[in-house]
Image (cartoon, rainbow, N blue to C red; front, side):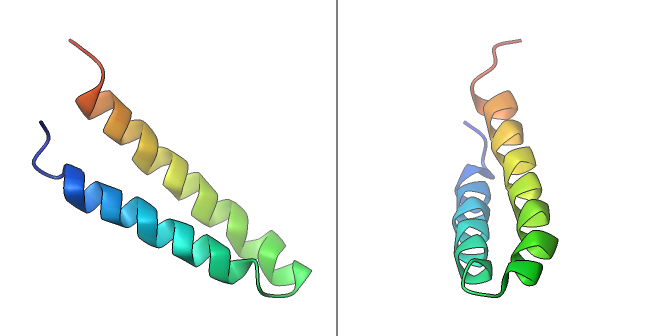
Length: 56
């Protein structure tokens, strides 16, 4: 198992909290920041899958 997995999972949880906070703002702020947070979250999740779920 990846020794960094717990830290990566904490990062995903923190990004989810950031996304929830962004959703409390005006539409302009949401449109500006939410896609960036979600895109980075996707990259982290894909990295976890690649490192822990794909047999090489």
